[in-house]
Image (tube, rainbow, N blue to C red; front, top):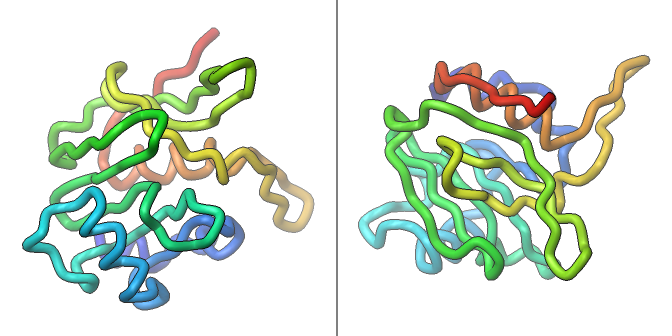
Amino acid sequence: MREEIHSWQVSRLINDVTVLSKINPKKAMNAIKKYGEKSLNPEDILLIIDNTMLRSAKQGMFLTEEYLYAFSEYSGKYSIKLSEIKSLKPEINSVLKVPLVGIRVNQEYFISLPGLNVMITHKADSAPAILLLTVFLANILSCEIIQEL
């Protein structure tokens, strides 16, 4: 999985997403302390999504070789073994009539990722960042993408 994440070129186009060696160790420690396992080290984090305005990574999501960890004031704290992820669904929830973009895992937990509510354009193509992340994660985790009709 490490190599797949490293080679994901689109991650460089999404401001809130950082991968592998580009991850700031202080941000990684903030995320671990806030919503990860205390036994983790910054170098264990393969991908991190920082939801914070001040770029502290105290809210967001990160992946290790075995787990997905997430936290936001809206969604709460969450962790799941990657092998237990069966489906992902890009979704927009509404909080006090404000749209909130994220991903629903296994049709249960909603990971709030507000910074991924942007269009990513590369050459002549463009797509929502949340959709690009969902497709990438589904590919590396070999799970289903659920789309509403």
